[in-house]
Image 1 (cartoon, one colour):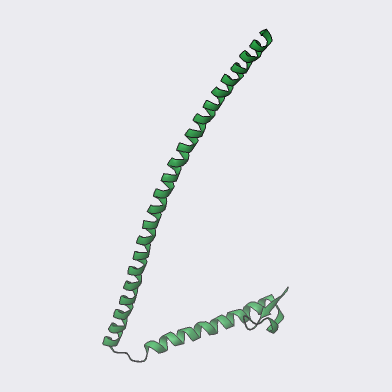
Image 2: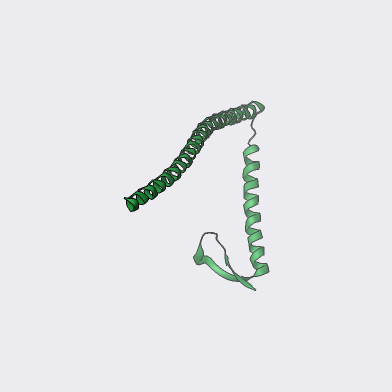
Length: 133
């Protein structure tokens, strides 16, 4: 089974059709080369012969950076929690108002029904008087 393979990721014009096992072999080779390059970069940067003090200074800088980031995220979380509390309070107030409005609508419908019955009775009485009169 053949599948299109890009020899250079991101370049569609370099696509060719290779048998599946060969396709995977090429991908593994490319990945292995990339992994070795990354490994060499990591080992070469540490093998420059930094002194203990330089390494300690670098670690302190990293610790300061991460501490600042943690403080920043903590402040953001606190602000978001405060906003959430405001929204929850607002939602609770709106829910209470909605409930009051529903109650008022229910009362008004009850009164409407009562007045419609009264109107019907009054019209019936008027009709009787008009027939008698």
